[in-house]
Image (tube, rainbow, N blue to C red; front, side, top):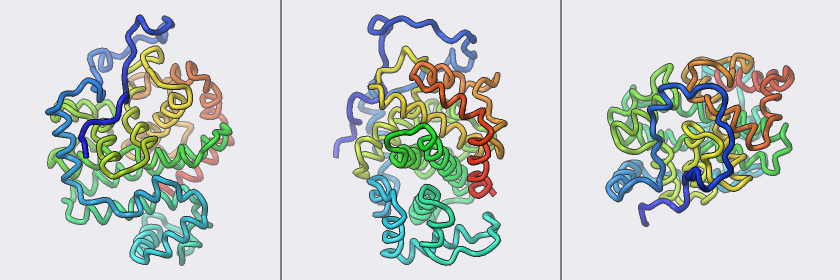
Length: 337
């Protein structure tokens, strides 16, 4: 299988190709002004080979990963999938009944789990259980890093589901599935680079991690993750979502060359992932404390302008809506107990 990512992924526009639109009124933080984001169209054959080598260090994916990527969007599908794999079911039930979740009564079956926790959450649990089979020989430091990555992913997927439902998204379950695989590149870094776990410590932001990845490996999670998704045979739509996952970090709206629907999903997924990170790395427990206009937060600097430019102003309103916050906080109380 070729190691070269599908094209175009993360291609940047030159100024002459687009209508000039004023930049956001705020001055770009120095940490972003001095940062150059690598995209797949800019890397050389040596970097592509290095990405492939990182991916090859991972064991073969659990068969359920392909099923998760392809759907499992109904309770019936989830229950049937778990019923066909008693070991996976046991892992899911063991996780959800652990002290970390502090449930008032135990979850006794796959159907009980799906009915009580919902499809999106159970898919996150299945993904975590599947990854556990690949990471059983990890060091304690690697396991801690992986746990943060999983928590961020689970929160992002839950948020994407809720957001998609409130926005009337045509495929909210697909949006949530993309979020479920958004951090695939981080999995490859943690398992394939013995020093990478330090990039996933408390308080680390996306910008911190991507800088560390590029400085140490001349790669980043979007490039490695899209390579891994292709190697695993995941749908091209998921491969592209991962490849585009860091674009809103360093690029203003005028700099992205994505079709309308793909652009909108990229922005929504980026927002969901940043909320997931705030939960996993900074202990966010109330959506009211997530401020997309916060000073000193370079990883969210462009979010508001991206939402406005892509015609998704309603998302900004939802973040301030008491009812929406309450629904998300209820999900969060289970995910991040």
